[in-house]
Length: 95
View (cartoon, rainbow, N blue to C red):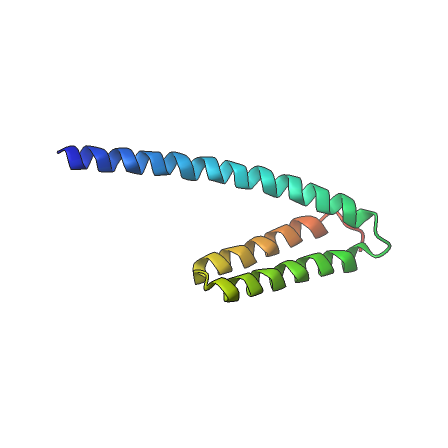
């Protein structure tokens, strides 16, 4: 019975931690996107600059994943996040 209680407490602790990390991730993403949008808008060719930023991010993820033998699921999620940031970033840039 004690093992079951300890296991349930650990599961609840991990759920709280995941929730806190999700909130932190959301806030970081919003701030990052707004910052990148502001920087891109100041460039002569904002679309090209956005392409450079996201291409460099993808290359960085690939290099980090390869060098560290990262979990493929983490790599895929990171690449998907870059795609999400790119969509948000480009949504406010002139074409």
